[in-house]
Image (cartoon, rainbow, N blue to C red; front, side, top):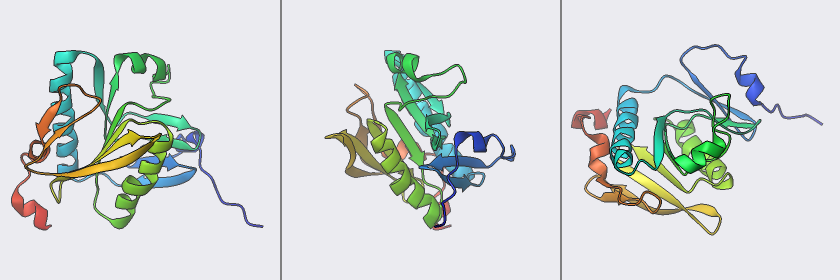
Length: 193
């Protein structure tokens, strides 16, 4: 009987620091190339909008691509997270990694079927299983955001928000922004690429 190779967090330490993102979900290794410029711009915009809201409330922290180690075989780096100060105090370990779910995770889709499946299937399942309260998937090519919220112990899609829609949150009291603000600065011709 053949055994399936399962990767762990200790395996990640053996990979080169080559600018690629190595993640493990349920023991399976996922590799991402350096992201597109607009992917990073959307991460920055989402993070900036969350931070502007957060500065008023001072109840949490926003971060870009932090290490989140749920278990030895579930080790990821989400694009953007928000976590409350109270939760951060319990999930941030001395190794500088989060070891449990932040309240909000945002992933920005990278092109390609494998990348989309990772964010829409593998990461959705992982984040649902590990207790993330809200999960947003931003797609800069279609200028929309899919929103999943925790209902009955799992993340369920509540809607796809388009560029002119206002996105709010059940966990970020008072946060609201126009979805198009996430994609500001991306020229229309970029969407045809």
